[in-house]
Length: 404
Image 1: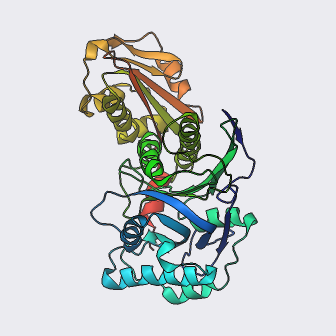
Image 2 (image 1 turned 90 degrees about the vertical axis):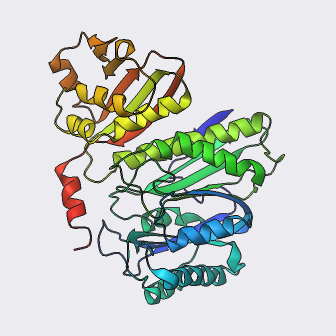
Image 3 (image 1 turned 45 degrees about the horizontal axis):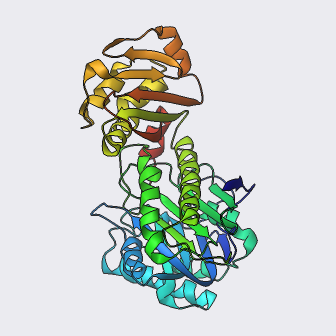
């Protein structure tokens, strides 16, 4: 199997998809060109899978998507930014259904096969008149992936789009995606909005568990601020337009598909962490030597989400006791005398005692745009990786002024 990244790729790179984005006036902030309503359209019925927020306060679009996921087929997605349609009662659910119906009618497809997502301010009615007017302007096209990616942004400064081609796996296929999320991102799936497309002929029985495994190893290992959104959604649509034998969970094509989907999702995860609210550094935490995968993930997530670890990186303050503190409360099986911690290539702590690196070396390692923290627990052979960002004064300013 060979993976080829596609320049300027996105949700329409895979065959059978078109997209569009426009500005309706819902979102009043963000970089230009400011778009806030996006449409993804599938030319043929697609296999669909999804994972969503685990928050008990969830939006009407999440409720509707969960309901429609049971149908197993999708023809598209309508998404707005600037208003999350959360905590809006029966009216909010009716508005979500109305959005889907209008988008489906615009594309000439069954209403029940259209999915909905919304992101933005919580607790305010959705401005349906603006959405209805905006929908009339949307013209899905193969070149519309960039506009779609911008339309789903909230406090993001940059859009996030990726696509790749998988070659030598029986027959070539593509996977593309777009994601957003600069704050309110914490591992409790799905942490962000993430929409993926593929022209691989993936069976429904394989696609759902595959997406969950990929989410657990990518977006579920992302942290910005220890808060989980009410609107988190990750959806994948598979058109099958590339042809070839169905991918049903067994054999090399299934392995190739899952590996490629994971690589694309990790790339989007890194993009999200790098563009987080106020972030100056991408933090990558790798935990090796864990007793099992759950322990490895638990330890990595706890370190990358620790406010004190984040501010350590912000100030280039070589206080590695903060990493040890986070490990100690992570719930992972560990013994202090077996732990080693590295900051960049420098050993800060080695098997229960201070390591050989100087404070100057450790501080310099945090000057880099990408800061790597590696932990060896000395308990077993399991490993995991998590991604996050530092915590800066700009993060506070952004969220102090979010609705005002």
